Image 1 (cartoon, rainbow, N blue to C red):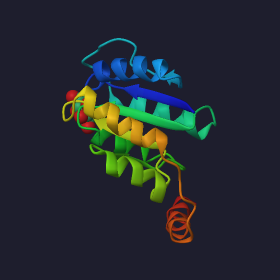
Image 2 (image 1 turned 135 degrees about the vertical axis):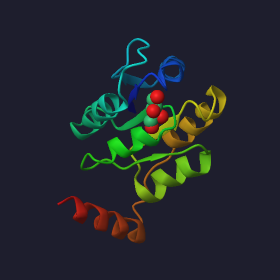
Image 3 (image 1 turned 45 degrees about the vertical axis):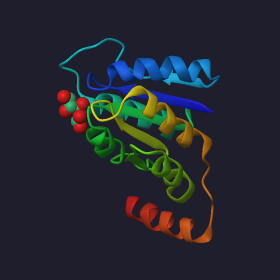
Image 4 (image 1 turned 90 degrees about the vertical axis):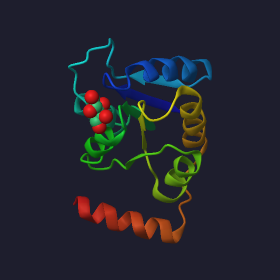
Amino acid sequence: MKIVVGADHGGFHLKEQLVSWLIEEGHEVEDVGAYRYDQDDDYPDFAIGAAKQIIDGNANRGIVICGSGVGASITANKVNGIRASVCHDSYSAAQGVEHDDMNILCIGARVIGYELAQLIVESFVASNYSGGIRHQRRLDKIMNLEK
Ligand code: RB5
């Protein structure tokens, strides 16, 4: 699975840790920045960058990290075809993929630490969309809104 990862200054250090770990775990990782800590950078730049990699077919899933995860989520969801959410627990990370076909996981690095983030990312990456009739019906309603 190819995973695109991005973060602003609020998520920069956690991103660096997660990128190293994901590569060690054998994932193909595309890092869309930030590439250095810059307290004046803006989360939309990295959330949009990650979203575009998915929409362009260059990555299967994305992880975007900011201070709370909220700004990253708001931004990513503006891109048609992106289904992003803040998840700070493993259950939501798994169910978000299984029921809602979530393709971007947003994390707040000021809310949770590295170890919990790892567990959440593991759930996100290990899960697959169910394709169930009721789940697809709900997704179709969301996709109709995007037209
Ligand atoms: C940056 O200070 C912070 O506002 C941002 O990382 C994020 O938490 C926004 O939702």
